[in-house]
Length: 134
Length: 134
Image 1 (cartoon, chains in turn cyan, red):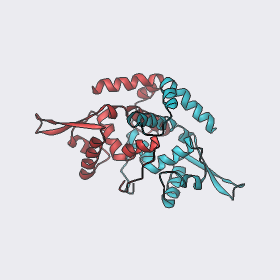
Image 2 (tube, rainbow over the protein chains, first blue to last red):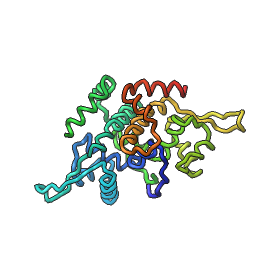
Image 3 (cartoon, chains in turn red, blue):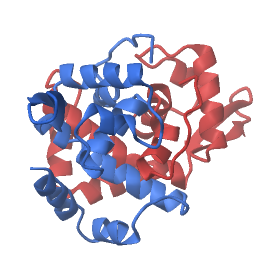
Image 4 (cartoon, rainbow over the protein chains, first blue to last red):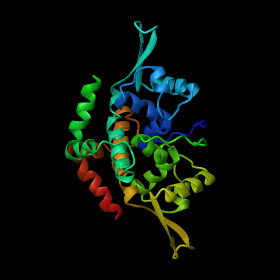
């Protein structure tokens, strides 16, 4: 959103300052579920993010301490992005969004085994995702 | 967001079509945590939503089946809004956002007893919120 929205002391409003932008959360999704790490990989996502928006959101996510980057010397000195602890702690939100969507649109690419696993043991699913990313 | 973003079959992208707008989720927050039901009540929220944005988002949330409304005859025929089952199923996402924010900004209005309860038994907290809204 272009306009700066006045902050309140509401925790949901605080979370939305970082997440209340579709593109930011899609980048986080790519990091969590798609094993993407590089600018060019994010650019190839099926929602078709524009280059200027992608650069802007990566900068904002880094400034917010959700994402961190380091230069990957082996690959033409590209920046390699990863989630910080603060970013990893957003995994529960993403998992819940997926489950919600799977319930209300069965045309989506949600693995039914994934839904079942979350229903059975959500905490374990979250731990497994974190382990994979570590 | 003004621009219509091309849909993908990703469940997180689907969820963001409804939630990836700060104002929509703040209206849902008002319904869930602030016991607000009327246009004028939403308008008074501390983030300062504009009248045209509020009208637009209420319409969109209703069209998406997340919110429903009925005429409240006793109160000058105002529309009384409530969450549908689809809307109630967003409570877990809101709870997770609150917990995330409480962890990363202790200046926010998050009841520490709430955080503790969620840590101990998240499912029960969600059930209790639903019961209160029923």
